[in-house]
Length: 182
Image (cartoon, rainbow, N blue to C red):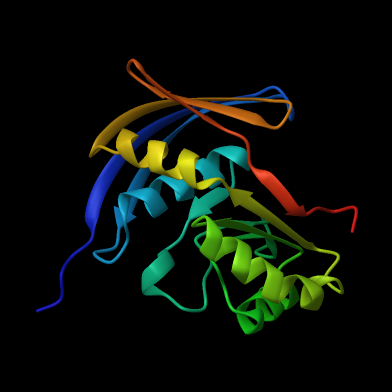
């Protein structure tokens, strides 16, 4: 029998000084049985970094042809495709063809570095692709914040991120591996 997703309720308060975005999102996060707390928290972090009233969490791991997070225009065009982890070159290519903008948030330390070394030369043709890496020490700390019901405060300034739940604070500085200036 298939295992069911675990439901997490997240009240996500985002204060993004870089984009002048200040909003609280009430998210229902379905954590797939094969998804780790670390990955789920990276997904919430990616949502916070790109928070918008039309940004949505998708079915994620259970669906191959959807990103982890997306944003569609009011007319249904795919404006933003956000993927997590280490997608294959084929997935990156298909994502860039489907969406106006694509962001990948990789994590996993040395494994992520090896993935990027292998992939980076084939991504130069995609002007709509950005790739960020979340340092391994930060994702391990994020993992510790995970609970079934979270009130998560996220402050973003000058590219630095501070996430807090109750008295626990995690600082994250995503590393840009491929920005829009490439």
